[in-house]
Amino acid sequence: MAAPTSRKFLGRLSLPERTFVTDALRTETVGGVILLVAAIVALILANTPLSGVYGDIRDFSFGPQALHLRLSVASWATDGLLTIFFFVAGIELKRELVAGELRDPKAAALPVIAAVCGMVVPALVYVIVSASGGGSLKGWAVPTATDIAFALAVLAVIGTALPAALRALLLTLAVVDDLGAILIIAIFFTQHINFVALILSVAALALFWLLHRKGVRTAWIYVPLAVVIWALMHASGVHATIAGVAMGLMLRCTVREGEERSPAERVEHRVRPVSAGVAVPLFALFAAGVPLSGGAVTDVFTRPETLGVVLGLVVGKAVGVFGGSWCAARFTRAELNEDLAWADVFAVAALAGIGFTVSLLIDELAFPGDSTLAEEVKAAVLIGSLTAALFAGILLKLRNAKYQRLCQEEERDEDMDGIPDIYELDSPAYHLRMAAIHEAKAAEHRRLAEVAAANDSGDDGPA
Image (cartoon, rainbow, N blue to C red; front, top):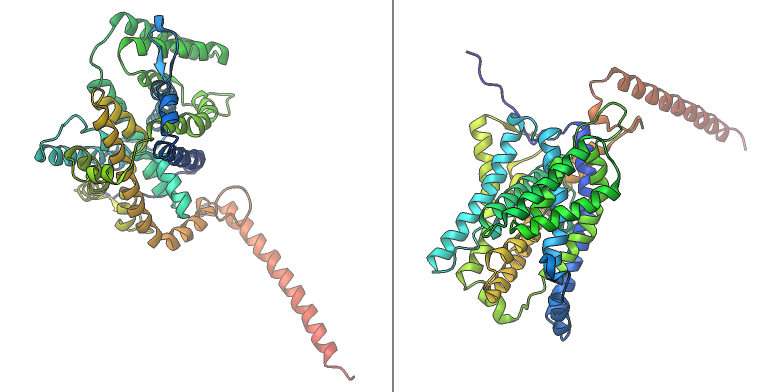
């Protein structure tokens, strides 16, 4: 019997996948910096004499009462703007399943196992800590999420490069986390359902799918229809962000004859900047503003619910993602990319402990009747995410010189054909182009040597 063949864990991405990851994370990095600024502004407003004005704006309600849409500004940000975020998450998930790293079950097994463990272990840490201290178990899902935009903002601030394979792992973790968050919200935080509104919302989704299948591309049709789908989903009692996910999953991710890009890619290219640069930062502006007095910070480390969130993010995420990765590689005989070490996987696992946006959303859903505890858990999310960011930042900084060399190798394009050289090492045409380039350089150096020799002989002549 033949021995099982080993596979690469965090191996080189295909060129199309690498291009997608690079472009997607570039937008998320910019959005992450804006998100970071919005969170800082929210904390400043909530902890200065402007807190009263900030609270009045956040609690101001508007919208049609007849449609059950008279919501506060904070609720519009949570239920409305985050729908855009989850719409992009739905597109990402569809693309990963159809054309990305998750399309091959064997290749997807390791990062998916790592991501699932990175959700289960933080939840277990929360339950153990909270139960042992007699606290509420309602917040078990709060530390399960990873905020990729915030994580990338941390990388941008500390100036750390990440090789493409580690960036892809971080993106896969975030995509699976988003899927987990979608399921958690839909299953555990839907209590009362208006079936008439839900059926109408599903019917509108079917119309959305039919129009898309028929090739209709007019935004003036889809945008009003999307608003109707969202409003009906909100009225049904199912969290409105599920509507965004459903619409994202309906978009076609494959390219047909005559198309340069798939519809999903076109829409994502337009909507992602709105999500990363506007929707998520505005949500953070109205969700992250919590008082952080000395007593409040102390309570985070003494109250079982808040301590469970902090330890879930900092310890649970790192242990879960790293442990899941190592066990999956061990039992599937996958070999780690020779350019990387398990210390790199642990650093990314620690970075996954930054659980900002979705953690804040789940916090609001988990403690709807206890505003005091909800505010304290928000503070725990902020402190836990900051701690995870500092810890991961130190680990990544220690390896930054190696990461920069790997990134330079991945970007090198000496034949200037627009394709990194590392993807052309098996191409005869590439080597012929490089031979011509080196021959031209050699000829130029021979000419310069002759010129230098002539100048030397001239200098040796009589005065």
